[in-house]
Amino acid sequence: MTAATEQTQFECLIEQLASALRLHLPPAIPLSVDQWSSAQCAAYFKCSLWTFRKDYAALEDFPRARQRRTKRGHLSQPLWPASEVIAWWEREEHAPPKRPGRPRKTRVTTTAKTTAIPQDAPE
Image (cartoon, rainbow, N blue to C red; front, side, top):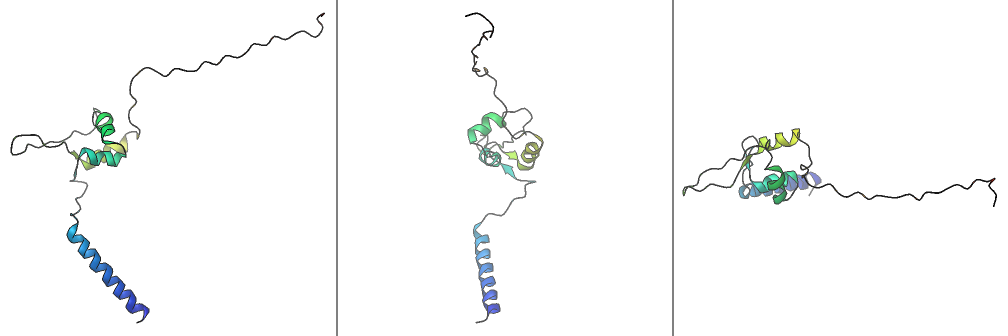
């Protein structure tokens, strides 16, 4: 076997593996139409689900979640348009908002006062 024949067999094997994987993977949804759950948004922000819900989703300027009615009349889980979430993230600061509260106590350091003794003073 020559190196060229081995290369073509290797490429053929890679193509067969890729086509087999495509059968088992869901199709990629473009970000322009994709809807993200709370967990997907938290993963994008690299924070916990709790932090996302408490600090980000509750902000007034965060994109509004969409919910659909199920057949039984219940609301589905909240979903956010992926393109709007990404656009919001790119124009906002990347740190979660500061929570209001009492400021931390600052440690007060005292310096010892030294008194100078005059050199010409009688002892």
